[in-house]
Image (cartoon, rainbow, N blue to C red):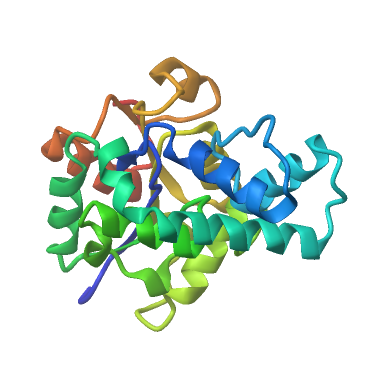
Length: 238
């Protein structure tokens, strides 16, 4: 086969970068801007942005309408844009992430994008802030404002990659750190390499069905082996 054999889709938060609470700060700013009220609580634990917005509105007694959802999404994007220069001071690129992105970007057998819960505009700001944005193809990526169901984002990314070639389910490899990534891979038929770099431990991820769980991305040789093993042999425990 000539051309890419795999479509590798990266989660962003706690897989490639750690923002160390910056997202929560931006949500508080955005909620105050959108509704003139203090944000009491928000859980950013792996749900898509559409999901998070819906839950946040309900928990604050605001009717979940398209208008209210868009108002908060726009305010969130504006908050990240206006304070993007602060992001590197709050967070960091996680161990091995930059090296891994460079490695797969330079492998002609791999085409890589992102599959993230973030709004598209916020996802770009995050990777731009850490110098990683040029290493992924944004046109084959899928985002938290595309669909509320993370598994549907895999279908969208495959569809967007058709101009490269039609990728079958098992030619798509997700790399992520949450049970929602496990769910998305399982439901969509994609392969998964999980990393225990977020709030979920290796045991947590295995309990919800992850077969391959790495401690982090720092062992490039092992990561590469698992990405290709996921394609050719099915997920196996690392």
